[in-house]
Length: 321
Image (cartoon, rainbow, N blue to C red; front, side, top):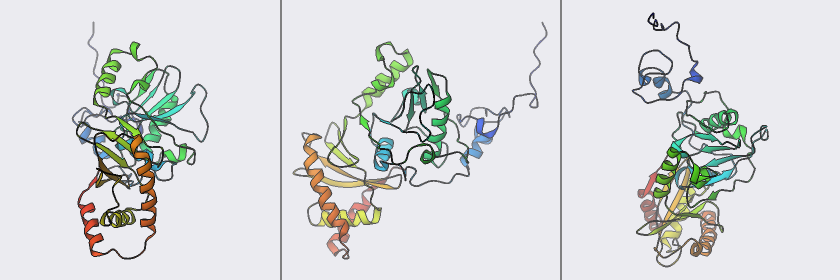
């Protein structure tokens, strides 16, 4: 039997830039050049023309909840409304915090689509990467996951594909059983991924009295993490006014300890006593929202004490993204 002659570079099937998937930096580039990915199309991906978008979810309903589901919430889903309506054979499209094996998206056997929000993205615009994943998931065969890739620079963003003002209503889950309709009969690799994810999930509850505030339970103490839509400088001034006046807490034993900065928004964080549950936070959070609104409306210059309080808050700020 004659040996099969290896393909030359000219004979190999050539992929366009938009078809080349993202792989490990040291793996062979999928384009067939014979070079490592980091020295070939990975270099182009690293220097992609898409510049960093500071607020990728701006313009979408529930921007604060988008940020929370991306950075803070372990297990949650939210139905999405497409501008063009659902394609034939796709009964629903939902956002999910994470999917098994960190898949970017999954088209279930029944045709429904789940899009993973907490995946790494290849460009500086999370919205464009998610939109590309969504489009490919709508065309995927039922029962198959969608793999990651670098989205075309000229491709649409979520704001182009979704009804921007449609209600965004996250549902927080205690575990990841929403991945599959029948968890007991899932594939072994999915079951293993499900078990690992459930073991690592921090109990989390979304408050009803205010927008985008999430209570979570940890072994030592509980926390409230509240994604706020206000401009950062104005919000820090307002928090400083309340902190200096001794009114920044959420009740006895609670303490404003700092904030995150995530996707262009600020996320104040409170420490709570371990016995303080999510239901205990509803009234204090609503009352704090009223105090914060008044502080945001104040236009007087900060007092020396308020400036010191602001400096302390700024020093304890951590950037997540």
